[in-house]
Length: 356
Image (cartoon, rainbow, N blue to C red; front, side):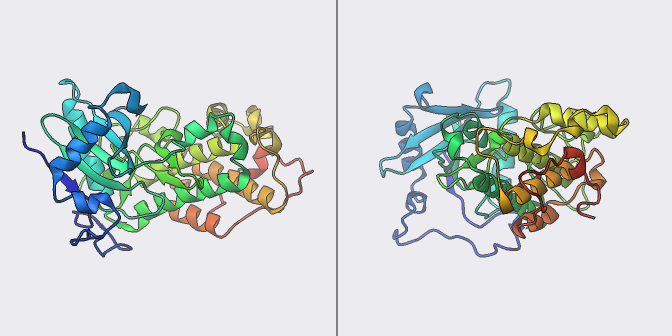
């Protein structure tokens, strides 16, 4: 079979203004990155991954998604990587191949600390897979559902995770040329490292916006995170990612998916706000109670982030902020002056002019 295993370097059909220098591999083999050495023998890398996963045995599987399964592989060098093997059943093989192409196209043109690194990919008649850096903590969703780990996921770490995701999306939307839209931002597609630094992953449904061409596409996303306008339009726009980011932000703050709150906010926007009971909730009722209530400057910053998230959930996409505005506001440590004893309500944080 024809085997193609390629080291991902800077060469790509899309480029980002911030990163124009190709991250070339070390020709003399002095690089500590094993992929820079092994890229000269694709078959050796391929066989190493097959051996490390015992040909994708279920015991190495750490996650299952729409396009395939993710495996943990420890190579002979000791390096641990995540391997996303695409589905190979005949009825979905074509969709998986398209997802592979989209993911490669999106990730080979991006270089950002908050975007997962793609080390390489393989496309053969036997197996097709992508190889990424591995994150021991798993996804944001995993951490939020882990009752032991959640106690160390304090407010400073949560703010940093939100900041990291905002920075990644701002980079994709405003610094990549052409822009890249993720289209499936959710807590399961954000990976966390040991420092609780966020890394956006799973670009299988990503869309690279082409100027002067149609950006209409099929539906993509995860139920509970997709923007409401996708119910009647299939046009890929950055503001769809902004909405999903708002949902994820509230999920980080609340410690659970904010489905009831989001639904209530949506209904209140189409009727009298007095009909919404959740808008009268005190902020304290919304925050995750598994960690101590924030105080001082941290409380003010958390309150601002909730306000920001609510603006991202505006049902009218033209009224949502850009990810660049969001990223800049969080990086500036914007906050709301509030005391821990103050009974601030969510309705006081709903401000359509937040970023105007």
